[in-house]
Image 1 (cartoon, helix red, strand yellow):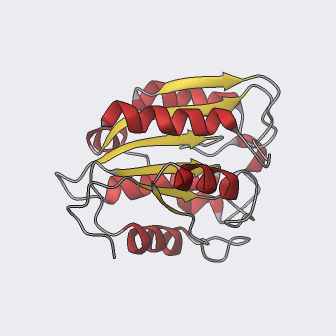
Image 2 (spheres, helix red, strand yellow):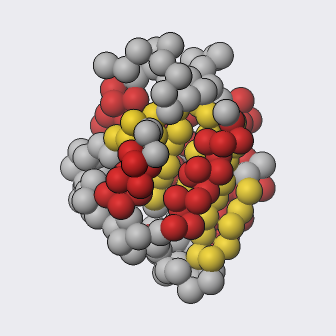
Amino acid sequence: MVNKKSSQKRVYIIHGWGASPDSNWFPWLKQKLEDRGFIVTVPQMPNTLTPDFNEWLSYIQEVAGRVDNNTYLVGHSLGVITILRFLESLDTGQKIGGAVLVSGFSELPSPVDHLPWLHDFVEKSVNYVKIKERVGKIIVIHSDNDHLVPLESGEILRKLLGAELIVVPHAGHFLVRESPLILKNVLKIISRSS
């Protein structure tokens, strides 16, 4: 258990549907951040092929515990809406240092609307005002040719969260093993909140 008053930066990387802590750029980013002295956790979200919203939210609440301005969240795809729901659930006065949201959405992205379990994640409208009160800096990273989550989803997050949006040409759904761009932006939000 991390001391609540610890000044050490903690980063939680939340993967998406069908993924694991060993997928994509997650282990690479974890190692790069640990090399810089951060405490990094990439939890294995439960039932990743048929995710349950309440189970995912409860799990991230359990893993993260009580958060503070030394807590940072990085999400990919389904991990993004999970992070947004987690931020909504925080008590008044709780606030994290920042978040980097990659290939994410807050409303049902049309290419994947055939996945019935997804509706539970987006059924209720997101409280963007509450989220903005509970997070410092937000950076949204999206590709202009994401075949699963269209760029429009990133633009919605930018607009409604007051986030910085970085559009990356031809990066698809960011299913790569390394991403210096994501690392650069995680370090950017950490340095801005220090």
